[in-house]
Length: 503
Image 1 (cartoon, helix red, strand yellow):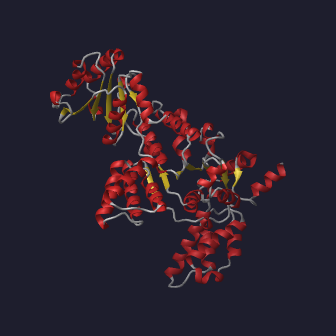
Image 2: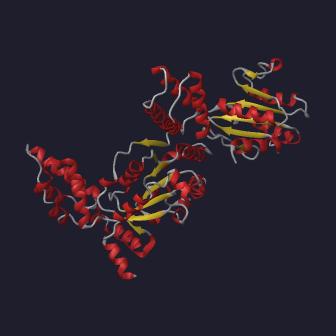
């Protein structure tokens, strides 16, 4: 059910108090007026703190700087006269005892009258004593169809035209922005060179980055890593490559559903985060990084509001990759957290969305400690697959050394004994191999020469890998994976052989 259908239903059902959290004041008011006109031409009265009521000459300015008087005005309209009252920024006054009491009185009174009060606010901020009388309705960001209509209107107004491909690219790049921001950035592009050009997509993307930064929840992450930058993990790579075209229109016509997501479990430093970035680059999709800790806020209800905002932005930017790093740290020990149930509600909202979402948002979550995660998140339907990323085998270490040395010393690659390096670094993760090379470069740089195989071996001898310092914990994780609870990311790992022997 979209916003207009839901709002129309609430008007007909005589819901007295409706709360709409949105930054798009102008667009939501237009939608409300249109639906009010469709419901027997209901008059719409608009109030704000500075100017009072507007639009009706007889009542202009009434309730100026007096939010209680703005509510009293509702009772001055005949009980049988239908009306919609829009109160802007009214969330600022809900903590006042007189305002809260008046709203509860009106909630009782208006059940028998064809009147509705709509509170507009940029965020959800509802005191506990008003949660039962206020109905929250989400107002979505502009859809692709809305954006295309606006762009075409602008093109007609300026006398310009665009190719179908450029129009589709421009519309896709605008998704996730409010209509006001879209108009502003397109006006800036036209002011710069008199018309819309393919280069203007970069302007839109920069505006999008700014918008996402302002949410302080999501980060627009640049993804330059490629699948070829990942050493080993052949099973995982094959799985990803098969799904490279799953977001295309051809896939929809074939009947394929959108891929839902991927949970990468494993030892720290084994390439889980690198994989998330490589997926976005290979699939040519924007990468949004979610810091789950930012979802939690001090005010009651604000954490849930931030979670809904995150979901709304991610869906508006779809198709996209939503990367959640170390999800186990955010939701570990869920039942024991003393936060009045906030973590449980945020978690519930999040996993419900993951199970029911139809938008092409591919969630890539990484976790180091799978046993601390609630079992609900591991249930089929949340993710398409759970992969275990273990320590690299000797062959995979060769591939990792080859990837890094090809980037660092492409002209001198053959001078390094990669076979020996892979043999001499058992239990090293990908991150530890990279750190070994950095340390070897320091050795060579300090002696005014290029680093060599012996320098790499010397630095490796000084590094104690995590596999030894956290041996028990890693062994537990490997036993969990060997029991068949996750798909193995590597084809020829010791765990793969162990599982085959058990079968």
